Length: 98
Image 1 (tube, rainbow, N blue to C red):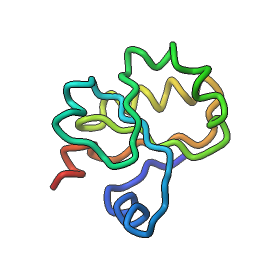
Image 2 (image 1 turned 120 degrees about the vertical axis):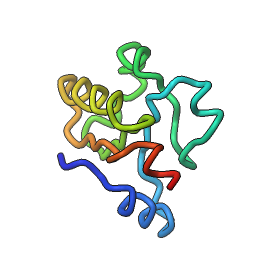
Image 3 (image 1 turned 45 degrees about the horizontal axis):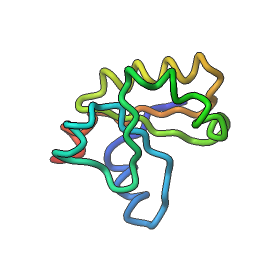
Image 4 (image 1 turned 90 degrees about the horizontal axis):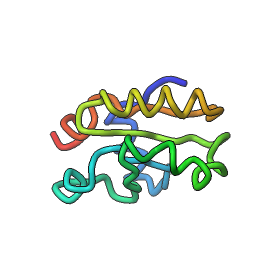
């Protein structure tokens, strides 16, 4: 699945959509800034949360981090676990906040 741009995500949020957004940063990073409606699952804990995410396997899931590196790893991991529609937020929070 193609990654998602900041512009597309912001347009969708402004239109009232509520996509599933998983923030794979650490909790202290989320305290500094976050995308409204996102849920925080740090990358290191993602494997232990798979059961909680089972219902999302065939739905769009947007993953993000600070710059896109950790979320690229999260996308690869989730895809390996059978998730069919995982999209990485291009540029992460660095791009989102600008």
